Length: 155
Ligand code: CUA
Image 1: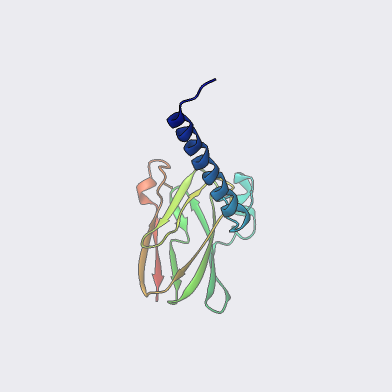
Image 2: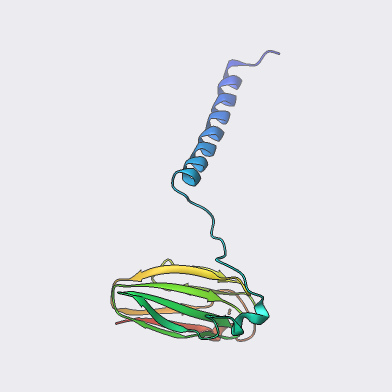
């Protein structure tokens, strides 16, 4: 079969670009350990409120300048809806929902996650500057969706 020279170059370019893409994926997975976000664990949604630590949601100091926020996203509020931490704190949010799908977006940060019933979402952010960060539910979750908000107060 005769293949035109330019056709051959074009095919080689196509294969080469594909190979570079696969190599880039392999390097990011094997060398840098990148992976898509995955749940930290699962609880039956009906058991969430009775399961530690979500039976006692709140803000907990876990170390020097380190905090853990155990948060419930439920129809239609966040518990807790106010998080107060000193400036410079590294805050790990551990969140789940006992009812329907919610989401949380904390303004002026990269925190933006889905909160799926019974699925544990963990995300960490360091709040360097004093100030307030509004957070809202960003997944339509029913008639009270627009009421779901809270704030992180960095002191
Ligand atoms: Cu919860 Cu929208």
